[in-house]
Length: 301
Image 1 (spheres, one colour):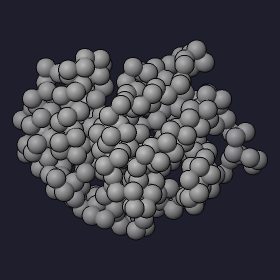
Image 2: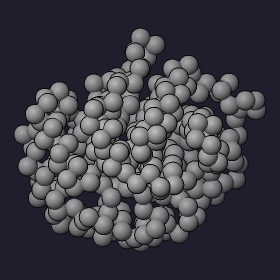
Image 3: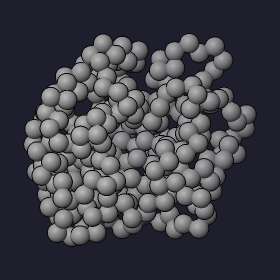
Image 4: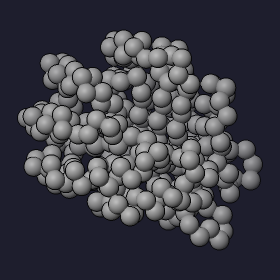
């Protein structure tokens, strides 16, 4: 994931911003009797990107991956429209507690830029609905030059999107955040239709780290900087912030770990899962790692 990559991460202030005032109001609306649900995963499962994660002789990466993690941020569906049979095949390789978070196909988001995409969106939704009980949340990532001038397209897409499929949206242009009138309008749209506003934490784009929730669920796309100290400290801060949000009412946490050098992602994810288990008293499975032979932090997480 090259978006937001920085050549000098040691010079960046990685402090998490203060919450948007509306975030606490959103969380107070939640049913706090619900059990806490946490999903942590990587963005890919292929052996090339996650080198040294799979034991020697692993024949099917997804089958093994799903025994170690409870979720995947599924970027494969961005590059190609998934077929019904492909989705069924993926689903059948995973256990009941596993969840997929598929990205909407680029032909919808980037090529047509939400313009005249009704047929494509219907095809996409029909096919990914075959995840059935393995469906976590679909997410729409818009190009960083998709601006407020295209707001009507975003409205039309959201209003027509099937309500039975949970949807999150990632906005990447600063117009959506820096102009209060614009941000208030889009956040109101998200709240009205129960669209989760994705939080992106990446080194080179601190201007997109908005801390504004629009549903009582949090979907974080975290990009490490392949810097041992700062990556761990940033995840420590996230564990603390999630605990604050839990106390305010959040019960659904979706957190996906990327690295510009992706092979580090499982190790960094394992570190974060350990932190969450300690913070929340949960018993999330910690992935078995081939390396290191010693304690996890020495891997440079």
